[in-house]
Every structure is written in C-alpha cells, then in structure tokens.
Image 1 (cartoon, rainbow over the protein chains, first blue to last red):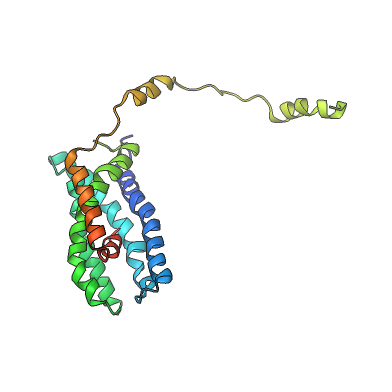
Image 2 (cartoon, each protein chain N blue to C red):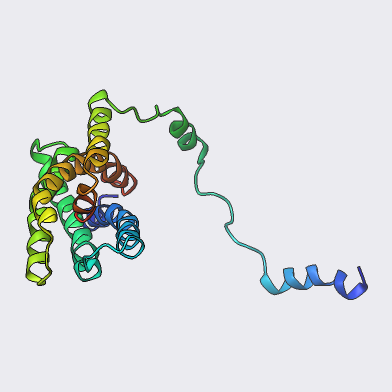
Amino acid sequence: MSKHVYLRAYMAGITVPSVLMVFALISFCVVRFSYDFPFPIERAMVFPLALVPPIWGLWNMLFVALRRRRYLPLGLHGAVVPLFVGPLGFAILRMSGLDIPPLVATIFPFGVAVAMAGYYLVWKYLVGFCNELAGIGL
Amino acid sequence: MNPSEERVPDLVKRALGPVADAGLKRDLWPRMRARLDRPAIRLPWWDWALAAAILLCFILFPAAIPAVLYQF
C-alpha cells in the first residue's frame, strides 16, 4: 500500500467536500427558490462546485508530504483551509459581478471563523477516516 | 417440473464450466476480530464544545449559515 500515496491522499481529500457539497447545494436551492432569496446563488455556485473539492485534495496531499517532519495534527492542518478558501470565494463572488448584499459582506469574516471550527472537526474525523480507509492514516 | 426444465441446471453447469480457484486467498476472520475489538471513536470534550459553539452560532446568527456552507 505504499504506491501512489499522493493520488490516494487526493482522492481521500476530495471525498468529504464532494458529499457535503450536495447537502450545501440543496440548502442553497431551498433558500433561493423556496424562500425567494434575492440573490442569484446559481451564478456563485461555480466556486463550491469546481474549486473546493480540488483544494481539499491538494491540501490533503500537502499534509501527507509534510507530516513526516513533525507537522501539525490533521484537524489543525484542515482548520487553516478557510483562511484561503474564504477570501478566494469572496473574491470570486466579487469578480463575477454579483451584487453582494451588505449583510453577506459584513458576516463573511464571521463565517470564515465558524468555518475554521467546522473544518477542524471535519478534517479531524471525516478526512482522517477517509485517510485511514485509503491506507494513509497515521 | 417438466423434463425439459429438469435439464436446465445441467445445461447451465455445462455451459459455464467449473469455477476455478473460488476459495479465499487468506483467512479474513482475524481481521474482522481486530476490527470488532477496536474501541469506538471517542470525541474529547473540547470537540463537543466546538461543535456546540458552531451550532449556537447557527442558531443565533442564521445569516452566517450560507457564508459557512459556501466554503464547503
């Protein structure tokens, strides 16, 4: 099981966001179409659909590459991701020319902080479980 | 069962031929026992506290939910 470690790390990394994304998209669709939320969410969906899973896969590969050097635990390694993903997502929202409601812009840093806590738990338990299944657990 | 139906199992066996090497390569029971003996995952109290804090944030500030979900 020592072959293709980075490929297995990538696959283990993208599994969790690919599953969570379905639930996130369902929530977005419910909010948008059931409650008539005045924000074209479907135009902003490209970020969670196309970019977040590969970022998780690459981040997990980075963890595998760095863990031999007494690196951070997996949960803390994962908690760093929103520091990149949050601003990147916000920038993509801005660049796509969407009218971001002031409330969303105000609450976004708070969302990043909450996402860091969520990422810590998800990486520690779910990505850790996937890593173990893929034979690259600690 | 009529005589033609009785011949069906024989015909199927003859058509498919014997299955070679159908046995397991190794005994899987020791691995199963090891898996059963492994202790269940226990969450430390600070992880419970963190999960509760996230839930509390969602209850107090529902507007933060899309901002968080957007990053997953």
